[in-house]
Amino acid sequence: MNEIASKSQLRMSFIRWALFCVSFILLLGIGSGILSNSGYGNRWFAALAKPAIMPPGWIFGGAWTILYILLGLSLAVVIGARGAPGRGIAITLFIVQLILNFAWSPLFFAAHEVTLALYLLLVILLLSVLTTVLFARIRILAALFLLPYLAWLCFASYLSYEIDTFNPNGETLVAPGISTQI
Image: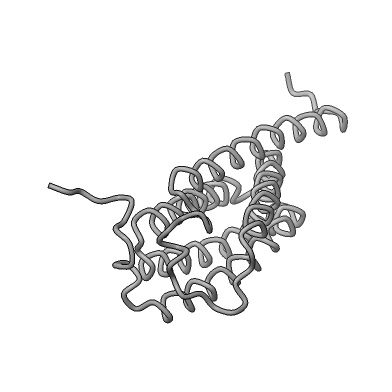
């Protein structure tokens, strides 16, 4: 059949994709944070010198929840844009930056690799900017959903840079959660 979907069918398709994408991204993001013992409850993180503008811990949980919801909505918008030129590469780039995003917490909080985590964050930021540009070519709404994420990544990059600067031997403050003792 070569029928065009009605507006209500397209809306329902978006809602289904949004529910799936938001739930999946939230699950993976929260899981990454829990598995890596991220946050102020982490002894190593508590021992680090932090910049004066470091927000309290509850801000991070709330911010990332909102950002993961926006990421899921953005992805759902692009998935729903069937036949749009560049859609495949845009979704692929989104997935790559998201996987790297989920790898950041274990690298920083569990492995205590402050400098490597900063470099990873800069790569995530670069890929996210490219993703936003590609999403804007497909659906402007998808790119708008990513703008708070880009702003937060810039802020997080600054915080990571300051933590790296304040803690030149930060990796050695407490034994890393990912280590092998023989």
